[in-house]
Length: 113
Image (tube, rainbow, N blue to C red; front, side, top):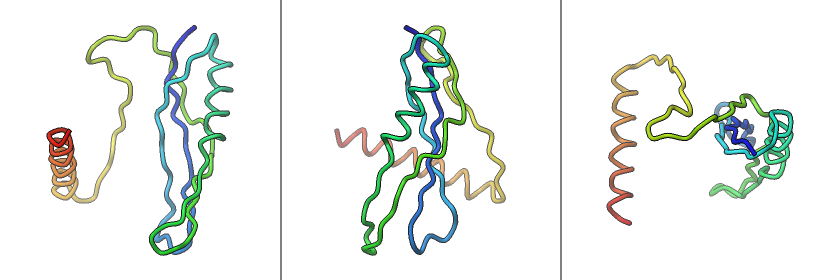
């Protein structure tokens, strides 16, 4: 068996959404071949479709779009890169502050455990 990382894309749909939203999941897939891994990732995406009622009492759904990327992991080791994304932003200060805020929240959550 081999391990793969699949990027599975979902479109989030709901009334009153200001902009289209997509949820990108990175999921581990175990398979004997890349073809089997792709099939398993697609099946997983379909099974993960979901819907909820949001706080405005409207339905919100996660609809499977497709598997966007699939990467075989040859070996696991500390510090290996499993995902990277380059972002272009309009406001550098806003983005850096956002990163620091998320990091601070993560640290608080870890301390609460």
